[in-house]
Image 1 (tube, rainbow, N blue to C red):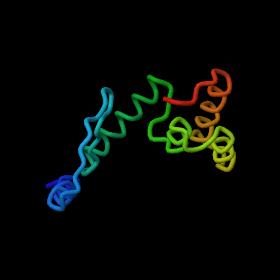
Image 2: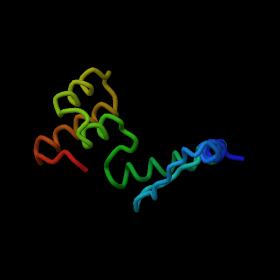
Image 3: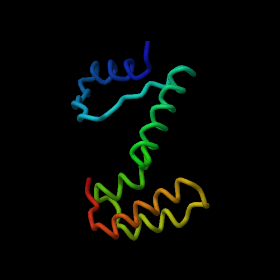
Length: 104
């Protein structure tokens, strides 16, 4: 049995389950075993490499959904130690400043 299935059943039992159809292009990745974790990791790596963007960046999601300003986003990125993730956030910032589009 899957932990997420157990959680869904409990919400259903309580009458609190809410369901939304995932949009096209959304992938649900299982990481319950070492093999499925490896597959999920390879998938994420492939998407990031081919599309030139990071997946699972809460800072970028917050920026694009309007929860934080570009200035707040840049402050968060600047507070990070030098790393590939920080570089990715800075690239997002530069793109937003250049193109002027925030919302996804």
